[in-house]
Length: 349
Image (cartoon, rainbow, N blue to C red; front, side):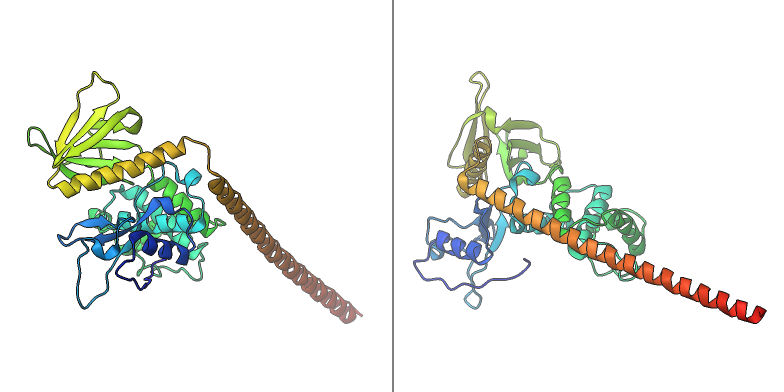
C-alpha cells in the first residue's frame, strides 16, 4: 500500500478517468471516501476535480518531474467498524491515520500512543515472538510520535518494553483485526478526521474552522481539540459563500447566522466542496444500504469467515502436531523406564 503507481495521461484525460484507473488498479470499491490530492501553484493542498481535465487544473508543475498525486481519504466514517467494509479500505485508512498520529498532525495522548503502537506491531508482524522480537529488535520501527518520545525521560528501550507489554496481550489477533482495533481507538481522538481551515470572524479574530463527518466546528487559534461552537449537519439549514465571506444558517430560524471570512475565495470553494461531500455521506448513512453495499458486506463477511476457518484449521494442525510430539515424548520416556527397569532386574539376578 505504501507504494507508487504510474499512469500515462492525455491532454483530455479527466480527473475521473485518472481516479478510476487508480481504484481499479488497487481493487478498491469503497471509492466515496477517497480522492487524489495535489499541491497547487501556491503550495496549497488541493483535491483533483473529477469533472475537469487533469492538465487544466492548477497543479504545481516541474518540467523534469511527472505530476504527483497522493491517493488519500478525503472523507471519514462516523463508525469504522460499521462503514469500512473491504480489507483494502481498512488498510488504506489505517496507514493514513497512523501516519497522521506519528507526525502529530492528529494529537494523541502518550498512553494511547503506546496502545496504538502495540496494535500497529500486531498488524505488521502478527503475534509477538520472544525468539524473534528480542530487546532492541524494534529500534528501526516508528513506534511513537517524536513529541511523546521527548516528553518523558525514558530511553528507546523503555518505550519499546511498554509497547511490547501491550503487544503480548493481542496474541491470536489477525492482522486485519489489529488494524480495525487501531482505527476504533483512533476515531475517538479529537482531531481524527477533521479538516482545519484558517478563518476570521466579523471582528477580525483569528479562528479555525473544522469540517468533519458530523458537522462544522469553530475553534480558538490556540486550541484545535475543544470547539467553541458546533454546528451538527442536522442543525444546519444552509451554507453559502460570496467571495471571501462564508455564511452558516442554522435550522432554528431565530438563531443568528454565523459569518466568517476565509483568506481567499478558493479556500471557501474548498470548504463548501468538503461540506457537501461530508453532508452527502451523513445523509447516506441514515438510509438503507444500497444493493452494492449489501453485496460488499456479504462478501466481506464470507471472506472473514473463511479466514477464521483457515486460522482454526492451522491452529488445530499445530495443536495436533504438538499433541503427537508430547505423545512421542511420553512413549520415549516410557520405553526408557521399561529398559531401565529390565536392566535393574537383570543386575539383581
